[in-house]
Image (cartoon, rainbow, N blue to C red; front, side, top):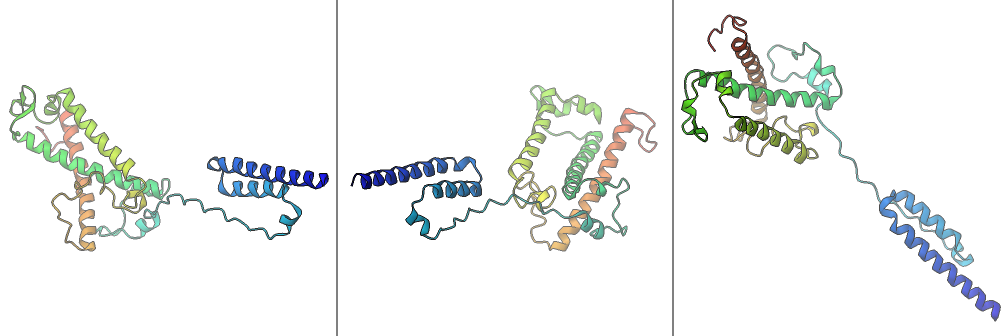
Length: 257
């Protein structure tokens, strides 16, 4: 009888130890891969099983599947080079061979940057022409400084903008970049995941007038292609204005800009 009580006490102690070990291992599951935890629990429990429990068929636990990492689905370089959209020249214009640099994501980043720089250049080109023609906005540019008080044009007009005004422009550009890369990085609409380059920088800014709302996909693709080409011309144009303004005679067609 004494031996039977000792056996019962021993079995109870072993089962209690099994529960404690399983609980301890389970508490560490948050810091260990699921498959590793399952193997450790099964191994630790098997060491303290009684003869009767060993005869029971083991139930294999299936570890939960790990969350799939976000994958990029941007268009590949081969697709871009094979299908130049609506470019009239018959092939992709890439004299520097940028399409061969890096991965598909690198090329998507190049395309996104080209769209943004083209838009900035188009706005700068129009602004340079408007200010050069003597047209000024109403109201004040800063406290005590009206737009009409700026007599210069081109770079002289830019130099007349107070430092805090320039800082606000840089801050706005930084916030747009932050919003685009942080809030849309893991979304399918991001330009590295198959989205349209330049579309999600600020909600409503891509097409504030709704001009593309009722257009077909072919018309939208045509419009994006036209935008890229106009942006390229604007980048060349604003560069010409800059050099003509800083280096007299460098651009013969531009004398007083």
